[in-house]
Image (tube, each protein chain N blue to C red):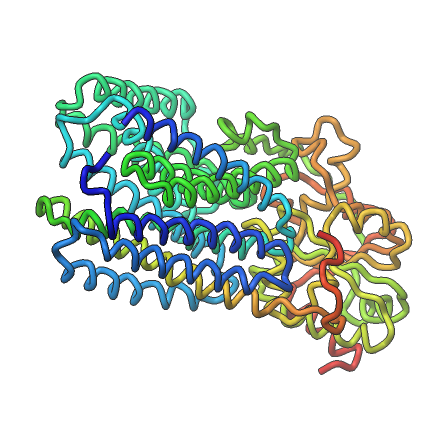
Length: 463
Length: 103
């Protein structure tokens, strides 16, 4: 260890220790909305302590560029913190990219500073750091691009994609192994970083929009693991702890998301990507559906006792959450019990629907998770589906041939009346037809979600 | 180096377990703010970048380090701001009584 490990060094380590404890508390307080804001405060104090402690370090002789960079970074951070709530998924993806960029750059700089004297273990974690960091960087940029719709949301696939990915990955790992043996081989290092960047792009372009919750969670986990690897390289326990916390958080979220889409555990780790293009575009004969106008929908809703609203990505796209709130208000005033059923993968990232509905001032105790509300559908008078499709598809329960067979769904088809607000009869993202639409108890409400809900509200005498 | 490595692995293992336990209890309601918070915390990697720039060992390292600090700081600042904005939106219809209904 460092011979001059004395005096101020101890102070700094103690500061890091306190910061680590604050980070853990910060996550612990996130368990309930009532304490969550303490969590932010704890995190902020921990962060300020950690950065302040670092500035005290002995080896630091140049302040100018640190200050400039901190100011510039804060300047970029403020607008990134002020984005619209509907833009949160792409903002999150972008911040995964920034985190991974930081890790990759520091890892690369460390390599060139230390080469050729890099111990074997350090070179291994350093390689892991830049490989994970590199692929998370470009992968997250791709995800952000798709979510922002700069890039096509449709999966982009080509023949032999998996083979190409595998070969590239093998090449990156192979080069890394060579570097572990011969850390002086500087010319090989850019190759490792470059391949990782390419892998990141290739991993995410075959993913369609509906798979984004899993992908974002997985990238979150990778970003954390790469930071932990950086902690090993720099021998910083603070970084290891923060990275491990972030890594396990992303991991848990991706497991939850994959369960909600009926994917296996290994599928998450290795094959979550690009599995869902099994579109069953069977020759669809035009089956009859029943449709209704806003007036009819309003009449049915005001006669109901219990209404469950099922929001999906379509609600986010149409920005209909505020109109939905008005509907909630008028119905509640009429004595109707209105609740919201939240499927874990509804939307584009974990918890997406909760944030949008909270933004529209809908109290969070009205937002009910799938497992809790599913038993209540048989006693529900109206299930109103707004922009959700696959998560309500009863074929997932019954049709073994369906690509989503086995996926847990919201049992809306058990409600007395089902109303579906939808722009047209086109099938959802996965290209799977939804038998729900052809049930006798189902009414299709064709139109833009925002306008249609607005129409219902007007009928009910809201605005 | 050897014992440091083992120490570090122990720390990683324990932190990962704590992470699993703590995060398992986070309400699904808050999964989005959770992700933006862990993102901000993860940007503690800025510490490594600060040391890199501060030690001024080579121009190359300083340039990479400055970009790294900018990227990570924007995550810290942006991450905390947006998490706070999101959490402020979560309101309950019941008066603030004993919290912790379910998960």
